[in-house]
Length: 417
Image (cartoon, rainbow, N blue to C red):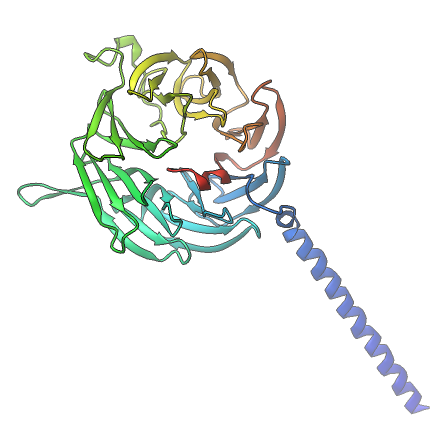
């Protein structure tokens, strides 16, 4: 009898252990599905949007082909003025924060792979053409810092210094860093008015060209889609600096005013609410459309001879000027007066054809890869809205924590992005 009771107890114990194990297994499956199911919903990364949530130190990822929220990656640090770069296969996103923290994210698994500190104050960066390195444009220390894209280890620091005849050195904040054909890096320096060219294909990353006195106070730069022309924006000069990368002989002065005598009339000048961004890449249809400093106009250049074709009046000062993939329309967000407004320029007529407000704090329009939709951050409403670029009707929206920069993975295959 005692033997039978022991057998019964052992059987019950085994059943209890089995039930506990089954419950734990079921819990693990449910938990794992809940935490990874969004990432598993995408088979690729070609149409992803990575959107910065600046104050919360996180990014959200959306599949723009389905307009579907996939997930959030947190713990990325100070993301005010953060930028996002992509590996050549667009599997990895590199989030560069203002505090010079670089976070490598796997976009398939939606997982933070590694985070490193690469300076004290950074305003962005770029991937080299060969995809082997991430280069940062640092304010503090004033330098270009180059990281191995696989390990995020620092492989080179290039101080942004100008040496005077008396041996004194003028350090500068780095701006306008882009990648260029030939595996080159080009950048400008805010405090010593120079532009340098680096060969990223050689082991020691030598500076192969140095241009000085390009204009007063460079603030940003861009490179044309074909990689031929580098343009340095200047905060305190009435021109932009233009470098033809085919010959690298000089930086030409391209006027930013229709008359060369002055910037404009007294009524033409407005406060500098925020330094505009040139990496919006509004170069299409034979034109370059750039935001004007302290003026409520968009400057339209002929990209054949870089002459000013027109100044298109705006209802505020432009921050980004973003061209659609078809090159027909340019979407512009504004700061300061009418800061919630988006204006659209038709490059066929060079006129504003639409002025509207998607919501409070509208900023950073970003087209989907084939231009069938436009994503816009509404920073002050806590959401991202998606618009049809032809009808201007809202397609959908997503909640987000103070969203700012929107970055499409198609940038992986473009110079300077």
